[in-house]
Structure formats: structure tokens, C-alpha cells
Length: 235
Image (cartoon, rainbow, N blue to C red; front, side, top):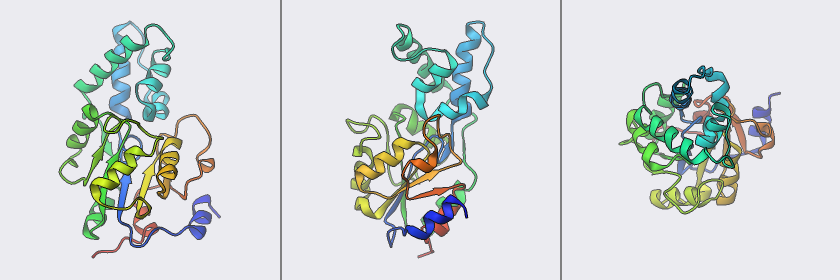
């Protein structure tokens, strides 16, 4: 029996579900191609070969810190890090909605949530400077009930503040919302907010602990699984 089936047998979602909140990078949208392209433009400018997307994809959820660590071999302790970070962010801002796409099943899931009258939104550590235009480029800016970025509250995830702010704006108690993410920080933030956490196995995941050890209430392999898992029915 799969890990997901075993968890489903033990966990029951809130009924009715008041809201479904999504992480952005690696959960709702595949943003890695545009993030990787920004790093590779920096490499090529310096006479270095571009790296394959497969090497950069796992760290895409970690933003500039992760991408510069793998793509430019520098971490926050390096004296050139801040300058490279500014360069990377400028590069990304110039072309952040070129190859970015919704993950398979996202469109049908969002349609199902809207037909059922379930609010949905995005809570991401991507700052609003980038998060808002990415959502706009995906055609979701007018549909999302809320967008909370990494600079919307004083603390980003894994602090619960961004999730609690999203619930406040949607006027939904945290325990009646569900958060879906592809990083351990997402599960930690949901736990701290008193919110059920669903981990996305199809996402970027990073190079830390295996997803089965994150302590999520459920693990999904495809976004459309949420329709059945959360008992989403047309209103």
C-alpha cells in the first residue's frame, strides 16, 4: 500500500473545507525554467556553460540562495553573494513569465474549487515584486482570493504569519483551511498555524529530508488528487 493511501485512511480533511492555499514555486506552478534561465544567463555572461534544468530544478523553491549556491557556487557567507543576488533578481524580473506554467491538473482543480464555492489563494516566500507578475502571467491574478508574498508579513515561512494573514483576508479560520506545498517549510508553517498540511511529491522537494518525514497530513502525486481527497463537490 502506498504512503499516500495509508495516510488517507488516518486523516480526514475539515468539512466543509473553507479555503485551499497553495505555495507557488513547485506546487501550483513550475517556475523553475525561468529561474534557471536567469542563473544560466549569469553563467554565460561569465564565460561558463549553462547548467541543465534538472540540476537547478530541485533548489528552485529556495529562491536566490539555493539557485546561486548550485548555479554560481556561492552562499550567503560569500563576499560576492549580495551583488550576485541583486543581479539574479534583476535577471529574473526581466523574464519571469516566459516558460513558467501551471502544473498538470492545476487548471481543472481550480475550476473545481470555484464551482464548489471554495476560496483559494497563494502563500509564497517569493516577494510580491515577483509573485504578483508571475500570477498575472499565469492568468490567475483576478481569480485568486488572496496572494501573500514573502514580504507581506514581517516573517516568511516557516513562520505561520503568512498563512494566518491569508486566512484573515479570506475570513476563514485556519483550522478550516488546507495548505499545499512542496517544501518542509510549508508543512512547518501549516503546523504552526494550526492548519492541515498536504505535501506535493511532484514538486521540487529540495535536498533535505525525504518528504515522508515532513509530518504532512497527506502526500499527493498530482494536484487533481485534491478534488477527491478534500471531498470537493459542486455547490
